[in-house]
Length: 357
Image 1 (cartoon, helix red, strand yellow):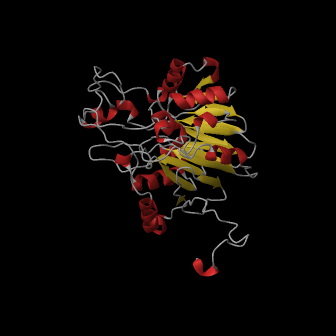
Image 2: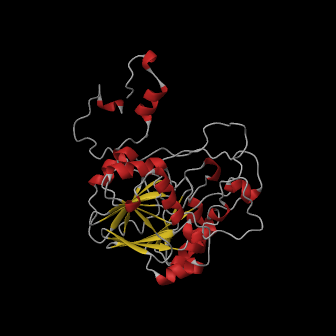
Image 3: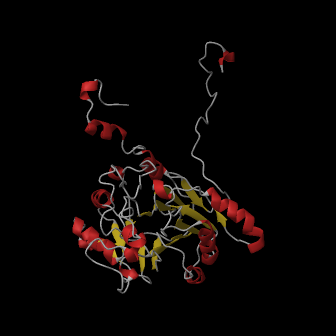
């Protein structure tokens, strides 16, 4: 409900305060109140590649929780000089990447976080608002990421003693969770260079281990693999051979012409097969209007190929703000929000006459 009671009291600040984040602290409260059963873990999709992991023991880890937005104006119609998509495709026109989903988490109400993990340096995974809120509200939280991510946190004022730099092969214990850093295959990171005067053509690529990692979260209730913004790689097989993976998250979307930035339908299935995971959950398709797609295409392709290829995994379509519990939800295919009205007719309806409805 609007705080202003007169039209003359309405301001942009009042509008923002009354309406954002759209879900308020509803999801924060849901997560805080969740009692995770023994032998399981719970996770909530926060939008883009962000998620919250909670274990039976009460360990809370947030990963790539992002509180930012996309385009607000047409501006001059041009892409920022040196942008990774400009380098990738030789384009000049502005990318129409509008934020396509609401804010489902209130960063200022975040509490009880044991660690903030970030996969890579792109600013739809890493932002100052999330860092500030976790730093203030969760004083004992660790900030975990590759060197490039940690460097940015330090530049924003996060105390160095709170940060942990990881590279592939490293392990960090946070509460009841063992966090393993693994190789990333986010090739868009390799063409990310903010200085427009720097030319990448004819040079050696960057050291991926310093700017991006994938994660494996080992819990008492199962293991969760986060591929971050990785493109497809045969090395997923290595990760599947060397680790027990129960659930895998990946970046999925409809790549525009001339762009390779997200996994497509068949690559999601190949990744899941290579990882030997039991469940694969596509993410990132939700957030950018120009990469939006229908993840049910994955289920349709899986259904066509599952008998011939003897798939041992299932795709699961989660929704932003939705909850996935492992192993309770492993045999389901799609999330539905709580429809409410569970106590219908607990009391007699107050109607002029029963036949009205």
